[in-house]
Length: 233
Image 1 (tube, rainbow, N blue to C red):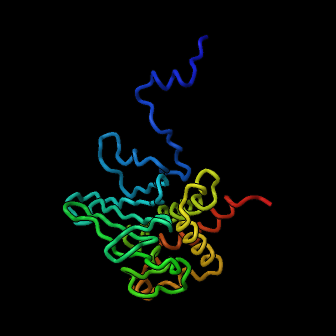
Image 2 (image 1 turned 45 degrees about the horizontal axis):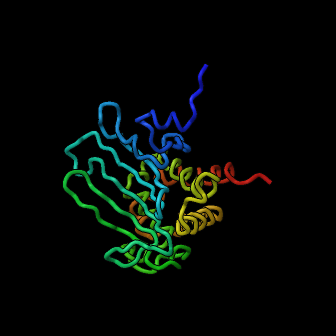
Image 3 (image 1 turned 180 degrees about the horizontal axis):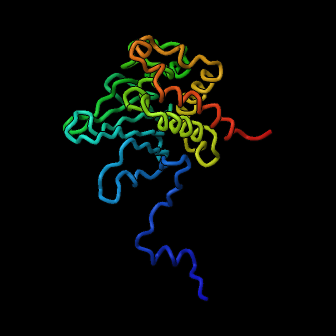
């Protein structure tokens, strides 16, 4: 039996590309973004995927909608974490974490919320309008709300798994940006003292996001995932 060298295999295989590290979180592709449609080419509904390549950590969510004529058909909402040394340049200023949203149809990208002061990554309250002075708690609540994750318990749990994986898994923790780590560490700390939901801006309570099934699933899953990924003593 003739075994080819790995280098020879690569040269002969025209389909070879980046190795897909797989669904580390079941149903959530990491570092791929290649499996966003089904075999017929239709975009998958309620799809989350993660990109840790480059100098920004990104978590994306496609809010699927079977009605292709709907204004909300396949909204793409993402939360981004550029490095503290190279923050994103938005019209509201330098952003250390921010949300982007692209609607179905003709709508362009816009940036509904951002953290523009690095100290707001760990602040108890947003220092101003969420548009440009959000803290970590309100920015994440905004992402959960805008993406539709609030009404999807599976997606809520997956978001917790994604964030704890990026924070703790040896495969990813050295790839995630420093701003993400600071953000996620603060979120985890607030969840551990049962302060994450109570500290959200009043607007989230008025809209019911605090009590939504996806939000509850996120909060319930976080300590489980964190414990499972933490180094055993």
